[in-house]
Length: 175
Image (cartoon, rainbow, N blue to C red; front, side, top):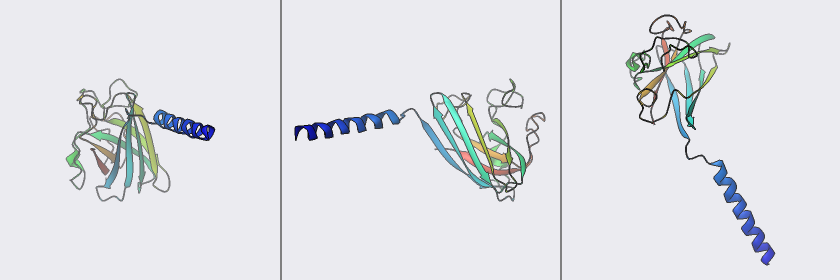
């Protein structure tokens, strides 16, 4: 009987230990749903996860025209306008020129381009330490901003927008 009780106690300790190793109390996560804009039928989701000072964005969209589309973080968490103009311009708290994410000069909101397949489905993932979720640093905090998907590709040259065309999907980055 003592061996059974000891065995059960050991099993409980092992289970509780495993559970505690698998939880990360430092992780922050925001899940968003895109709204169709500018007469499009674009829908989708985005997830921002912050872990150990790194934020990973994964956006999945449907209903796009096949081809290349720009995606940016914009100044405001306001998708109320039919064309999403209420979200303002690109988020640029460090007053840099528009450009590619890998260039020295780029807006904090210049995520880049992704490709929609022949069925209009597209996915993009970006991992960075240039953002945070709710940290209060005005040059890094993405809370209170808007996430916009554009009809066309970002050319990374045209200032300050990248000539990415109409805003076809919008989501507010809020908790």
